[in-house]
Amino acid sequence: MDLGISGKKALVCASSKGLGFGCAAALAHAGVDLTMCARNEKQLLAAAKNIRKFGVSVKIVVCDITTETGIERVLESIPNPDILINNAGGPPPGTWQDWTNEHFLSAINANMLTPIKLIQSVLPSMIKKKWGRIVNITSGAVKAPIPALGLSNSARAGLTGFVAGVSRQVAKDGVCINNVLPGVHDTDRIKAFDETSARDLNITVGEARKIKAASIPVGHYGKSEDFGNTCAFLCSQHAAFIIGQNLVVDGGAINATI
Ligand code: NAP
Image (cartoon, rainbow, N blue to C red; front, side):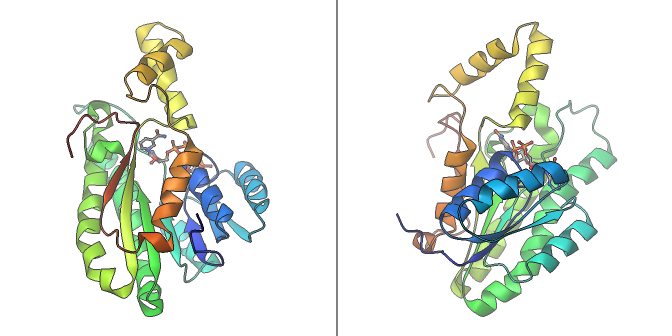
């Protein structure tokens, strides 16, 4: 399917690997020029080299996207993007007794306020152009809370509420804002969780992974490439009537009727 977005410009945050990289690759495949960012320069350079194979222009910004400077620098690199993919690292797991005000502020900054600031920065030019697409990578935790990820459950709920309101305010200007809620995907973040589970249960990482995969109706982890294609579709011309939605991409893991 031709997504109809060849020649558009996208900012894909936190995209040197994992789900962000999957989104960058899918957009590049559709002919979109990109700015990618991450903190580790070596990994980002390697990721950008891979993406350039699609024949699109790729700029990179080595930065922490959750800082004021990081936000400023990516926006300098791509002042008026047509497409914004919001992403950042997720908060660490833990238990409710341990989380301090500082932990909450850090999670809220990374997973709520940073995407909100970026949305606020790019919306005026999208509205002017009467075209824009914003996809926020959030988490299945928004729909079905994950007890050990209370920081994520809380911060992402805030972003989801903001998007629910603003997406409807800018819809008439041709701007579509949606959230995609990943379930378990085969990324380094999930590998780290599997290593912790294996240690806690005194089993191998392979066994921990097998147990988790068996709990997903499709029977396996998701792939970043497929996640990226879902995201790219939401950025396409065909998604012009999809506004303020929370699309769960989790292999059926959340057991819910709607
Ligand atoms: P990942 O494999 O660890 O990749 C994270 C990417 O983001 C890397 O490129 C990393 O590069 C970059 N990054 C992290 N923090 C950053 C920051 N502050 N500034 C700039 N770049 C940053 O993680 P993932 O699994 O793709 O997860 C992406 C997001 O989806 C996270 O918020 C995660 O909580 C959420 N999520 C993932 C899953 C899943 O199954 N994978 C499920 C639910 C939710 P650097 O480290 O070099 O900065």
